[in-house]
Picture (cartoon, rainbow, N blue to C red):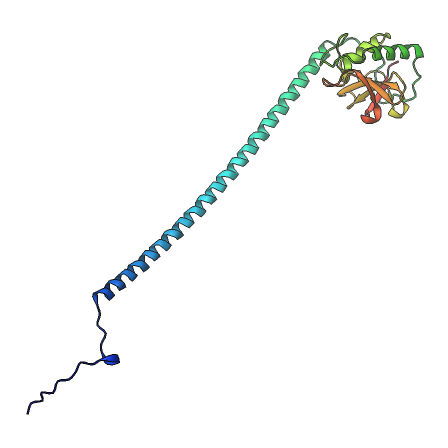
Length: 237
């Protein structure tokens, strides 16, 4: 006998879940999103690496540029120094060619520091002339009467008392008799720099003071020796 009993479809936990089109589309979308996220991560990593490489390249280029600038400046400084040295040598040679005969005793290594003082009349005359030039401008190469450089002033001053000095401070530094700074007397020539290579000269006038033609920004005037101590001195009177 046939069983005509109808069985009801399972329900609840025992019922199989139906897969819908919506579920399938959602899964595909999620997979695509994951793939896109991975691709974006790869792009971000690549961009970061490119930025780091670009930064490193720029840093190297900046360092190379700075190094080149430093080298160029050093080269320019050397060239300027060489040019200045050549100009000074040419000026010294020009002065030497026009120097006047020396009428004073030449220094020697055995020169004594015990030198008899000059007559007061000559010293007074020398210092009076020097003071009469106060305020006149310094002009390189000038020998008066309107302007002077340092050795032009001393040459002119000593000429008023019958002593002919050579033209430059370098040459004047080899004239006369060496005296120590502690034994200075009015009328002594004082120098900055070495014997034969002095770069400045003035005249000691007493009371710890000297008179000179200093530089283009300072006219002929009197200064305290303590403010700018000379290296050594000579006596020609």
